[in-house]
Image (cartoon, rainbow, N blue to C red; front, side):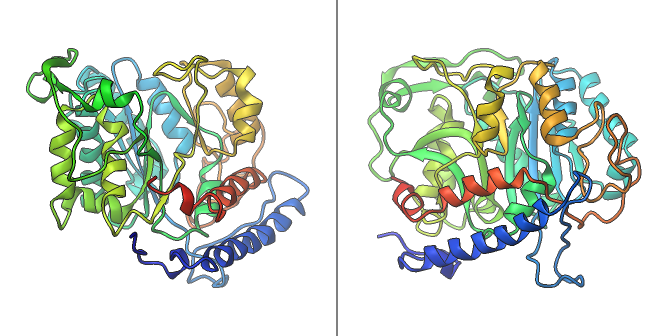
Amino acid sequence: MKRPHIYNTLTNQKWRIPILLSSIFSLFLIFSIAIHQSSSPSHHFSSTISGSSDSWLPEIPRFAYLISGTKGEGPQVKRLLQAVYHPRNYYVIHLDLDASDEERLALAKFAKSEAVVRQFRNIMVIGKADLITSKGPTVTASILHAVAILLKNARDWDWFINLNAWDYPLVSQDDLLHIFSYLPRDLNFLDHSSDVGWKEHQRARPIIIDPGLYHVKKSGVFWAKEKRSLPSSFKLFTGSEWVVLTKSFADFCIWGWDNLPRTLLMYYTNYLSSSEGYFHTVVCNHKNYQNTTVNHDLRYMKWDNPPNQQPVNLTEKHFSDMVQSGAPFAHRFALNDPVLEKIDRDLLRRVDGHFVPGGWCLENYVQGNDPCVHFGNPDTIKPSVNTKRLEKLILQLLDPDNFRSKQCR
């Protein structure tokens, strides 16, 4: 039987979840009314962290991001970084070993050239790059590497989010921070299922070897002739490689006080696309975390029909669907696709080459100008009307009919 974890609001008692949802909805409603009473986009409801005169407001969280890329993807990584940057957050930037030192240096120079980054020192560019093999366990190893860096150098964050050069946000960081302010800090967002289906014979039973674990040049994985049986000491889960993990759970995967994270890491060393199963299997096989899962990766993706193993590139024809999904991120976008300009203009109010404006930016927003050329208090959050779509998604995910019934099943 699953046992509750940390927050009393997330126990199995049926009356707890409706109270949590009612409280969240009421708070969302208050902010929504304030937002809609604003007559122009430059006058949104503003909130600050606890300790200010608005002490009734919840504490604003911090996100810790991994933004990864490979050779030739430096411009995409830079654009994505500008789109998700906020002074409260932390960012690890990783271009794998295929990328040149010049590409890594260019990103490091960009970070140092920005006054706000120099002040808050919240961007870390990995200089000694990891070798990444597509579909190999080196992907999982690289994610864990970034988590370890964040745990060492940025201790006061709440959620870890992994992105790559093909991702892009659909809401501002002010919107995301605002909505997550009202959520318990122990919720892990990851798409997961124990129904491995076709993956049993194509991923779970085959044994693969990733040359990236011992070579310095990228190549494909090797397949062993032997097959293996499904494990009996733990239950396999699979899902999306994109996750939003709590600091507590991320810390457990690095420093785990029992042997489960290490045992599963060794098992997934020979598992194809281990990043689509490692965190999912760890979280659902441990009694302290299996009740903390929300079965959604907070990404919008569009798949081929019949489905292939890779999502299609998103274009302007997908814009309406991705916005209505309420997801804060979307995957995947081709380099400089026109839909990115539309997202910048219509959703983020981002000026090309600059950060997305937020409450920390002191200049008034005028189309074509950079409102963040001067900055102030990073704890000032100005949510926009876009929070309504994310609010709707979160309330659906936490609805009693969806929440418990879709946890680790």
